[in-house]
Amino acid sequence: EDQVTQSPEALRLQEGESSSLNCSYTVSGLRGLFWYRQDPGKGPEFLFTLYSAGEEKEKERLKATLTKKESFLHITAPKPEDSATYLCAVQTGGYQKVTFGTGTKLQVIP
Amino acid sequence: EAGVTQFPSHSVIEKGQTVTLRCDPISGHDNLYWYRRVMGKEIKFLLHFVKESKQDESGMPNNRFLAERTGGTYSTLKVQPAELEDSGVYFCASSQLAGGINEQFFGPGTRLTVL
Image (cartoon, rainbow over all chains, first blue to last red; front, side, top):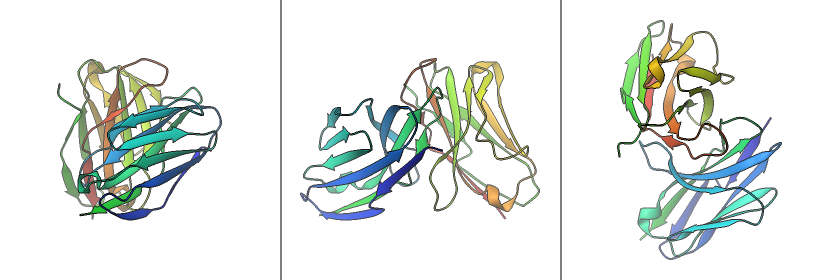
C-alpha cells in the first residue's frame, strides 16, 4: 500500500526565516507527486506537480524538489500570508486517485 | 472560470438519517473525484468518475455510501443510514484529462457531523 509521510507536523517560523518541509513516500510506480496548500475551511489548492527524480519547480517563495524517496518544499523568506497547511500527495500505477500525507501546518509570525 | 463547488458547506444530522452531498465540477472536466478527511487523519480517496461512469470506487467504505453522476455533469454522494464514524469533511475534485497525470482541483468541502 502506498504511504506518504510528512514532517514536521507543525512548523513555526519568523517572517523571513527560510526552511524546508519534507515528504517521504513509499510507493510502487510513482507517476507524479503533488504539493497542495490548504487554508482553514477551504479545499486543497494545487501548487506543483513533480514527475521524476531531480526535477524542481518554483513559484514565488516556494520551491519543490524530488528525489527517488522524498520531496522537499523549500520556503524562502516566508511571509505571514504563507501560513497554511501544506499537503503532499502521490499518484501511482494506472490509477487516477491521489494518496495524501497528513500535512505540515506552517505558521509564519510577523 | 468557476471552480469546483460543493453543497451544502455544513450538514448536521442524527445517526440513522440520510444525507446527500452535491458537487459541481469545473466545466469541461470529465474526471470527478470524491475524497474524505476524518478528524486527525489524512485526506482519503473514495471514488473516481469518468463522465458518468465509475472508474474506481476502491475507497468507498461500505454500501451505505452511494455516488452518482447524472449525465456526466454534477455528482451526488448519499450516505444512508449515516453512522457516527461518517463524520468528517467530504471533498470533491475534478480534472480535465482522461488519462495520464493531471492536476486535481478541489472544492471547499462539505463538513458532515453525525450526532
